[in-house]
Structure formats: structure tokens, C-alpha cells
Image (cartoon, rainbow, N blue to C red; front, top):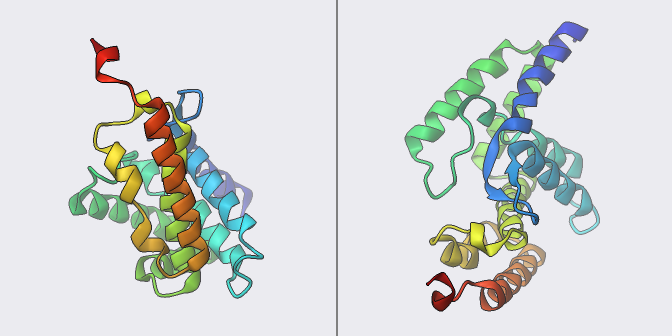
Length: 194
């Protein structure tokens, strides 16, 4: 790959630094898609010894590229995202990936196909970590930033994608305990709103 192509890819990916997500940091600042992708990647890296049978480098790569489509569409919260939104994002991403140098394009297309099929351990790990990171971040954000539906969503979201792993299920249960504690201790009381 020549330096110009390298820089062109980075310039597109840089958009994720300015693409806000539907979540805030622990100090109440709106999180970027790039920050989310970084932490999902870190989560994968940290699981190398928990999942020795997995190609963790591949999982990290999946985590790094999983939201690149949002360079073109922005972030749409999962509870608002429609199939039409997904189709537009996938189409724009695919068009961009096809313009990349052959080796990079081939690598990305192979990863995206594996991620979409959700058959390999690596793809299942990436998907679970992506969803778990969102719940963890909500637990870390001020509860006043939560939408009304997120009180229930934070209790139920992602249990389906961790069911393949006892370790991830235990992690999800610990996250649920954090959610329940946060709601019990931080939820604004009705009388406070008056």
C-alpha cells in the first residue's frame, strides 16, 4: 500500500473521532464511536487468556473495524436502528471498502463476512464485546443521561449474545448487578423532579 492510500484510509476513519454515540462518558461528555471501538478492542485484547482457543488478534481486528460504516451514516442507537438503516450503512461501507487497495479490501471483506455470519468463535466474541461495552458504558455514565427505555434495556441487553460462553455470561451478570445498584442508588426520585 502506498502512503497516499494509507493516509486516505486514515482520513476517512478519523471521522469516527467526531461521530457521537448515544452514550456519555462517566463525566457526562458524549462518547465518540472511535472511543467505543477502542474500548471494545481493548476488551478483546484482555480476553486472550480467557479464550485461548480463539484468534484474539482477529477479534481485535474485528473490533477495530466493526463501526467503520458509521463514518458515512453516523451512529444510530440500537433501539432506533432499522433494517433500512443497516442496509444503507452496509452499502456505503461496502462501496468504500471496494475502493481500498486489494490486500486491505480483501482482508476487510473477509472479516466483515465472518462477522455477519456469526458462526466462528471470533465473530461471536466480537459481537458480545460490542454489546457488552455499550452496557458497561451506560453503567459508567450519569443516570440522568439515560433514556427512559434504557432502565429496562440495561437489564436485558446482550444476554442472548453471551449465552455461548459461561465466562461472558458471568460477566454479563456482574454488569447487571452494577446496573441494578446504579438504578437503586442514582435513579432520580419523582419528588426530586418536582
